[in-house]
Length: 199
Image (cartoon, rainbow, N blue to C red; front, top):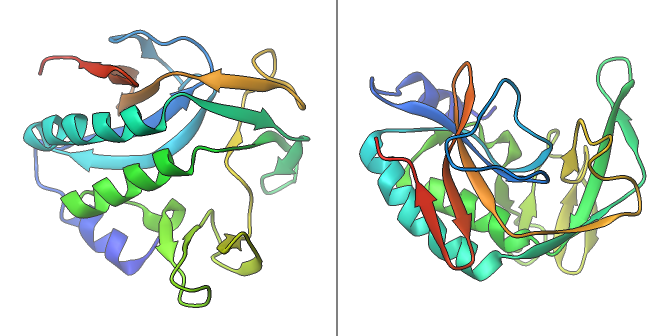
C-alpha cells in the first residue's frame, strides 16, 4: 500500500462504509447478501465512501458501465499463488480495460480512500501510457504501448464449476457490494442504466 493510500485510509471520517466493485460471473440481484463474494473480477478494491459520495459514484460509474458493457472474458490456464503456491486462480483476459480504468479514475477524482496497490498508474517509461499494477510494481514487459506489471493478470478465485480454462463468458453487469460482515449488492450497473438500494 502506498503512503498516500495509508494516509487516506487512516483519515476516513465516521459514517463512511467500505464497498468493492466487481463483475460477477454468477447472477446477482440487488439486495442479495453473501458471506463471500461470488466468483468475480475485482474492478475496484475495497473503497470507502459516505452516503453522498456513493450517490455521486453511482451516477458517474453508470456512464462508465454504459460505455464498457457488455464485455467478454477469456479464461486462461490455471496458475497457483499464495505463500505455499497452492491457491489456484484463473487468469482472465479480454477487452475490459475501460471498466477498470474508469473505476480507478473515478475513485481518484472523487478522492476516495482505497488501497492503490491494485490501481492504474501512469508509467513515465512508456510514453505516458497507463499500466495496471497487481502487486510488486516491477515492470516486466511492454505490449501494445502498455507497461505490463508483474504478479498476475486479472483473475478469478473459486472458479470451479463457474468457468474453466479455455472458456469464454460475456458479462452484462457490474456490481457494487457493501463490504461488511455480509457482502450486500447495493448497486448494479448495466449498459442501459443502473439500480441501487435506497439508504
